[in-house]
Length: 269
Image 1 (cartoon, rainbow, N blue to C red):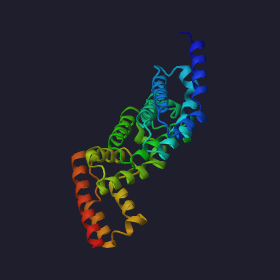
Image 2: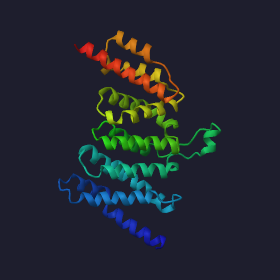
Image 3: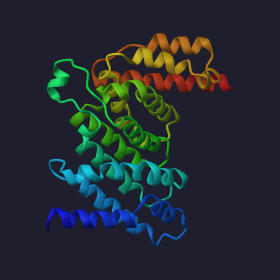
Image 4: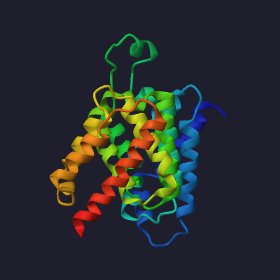
């Protein structure tokens, strides 16, 4: 099948599944049309997986990203029960991992030489990552675990946690969200995955560490209402150390969580 024919087919497909049409379908209470959207997302995942980032993929990449950020993610936020959620997040992961240079223009040598890496399409990258981070505030355990795995895969393959844009604009909010989930014990089945993710984020950021993060976390206004200054100081002094291996980090964090919950219970009574 020639490139021109494929291009024509894709143009026709995107005309049918344009932003407005997708938004309208997802707003409908009828679920009969949702499988069509879900299959379309599976098709897009295959497209963005195109080996070598073909020109055809690059041509449609902005359209796919706009569809994700303007139609799909807002619809999922509005209705958490939408059955397209799993395929949406698979698409976002495949889009990022296979088209990393669409957002980051540097290469391995750039990083090794300490050169500043050029970031492109920043807003699109932030919006896609925000959609992943949002899933960590939801009750869906399987999607939570899958997206944690995706983040760690992006670190392993692309160095996500080392990127300046991640460290400056996403890291602190994501760390705080994940720690809050641990403290609430709402996703205990993902406990080990959450702790290892916290460890990987902190150990790949030379401008941050556990002691600094814990100090800032305990200084948040919502924490100040449930912990007194004495208990905050005790937690910081006892557990504000920077463990360099995962087992030690895990033990330290688990002990912190235990004492934090004990102090909050004491204060509330």
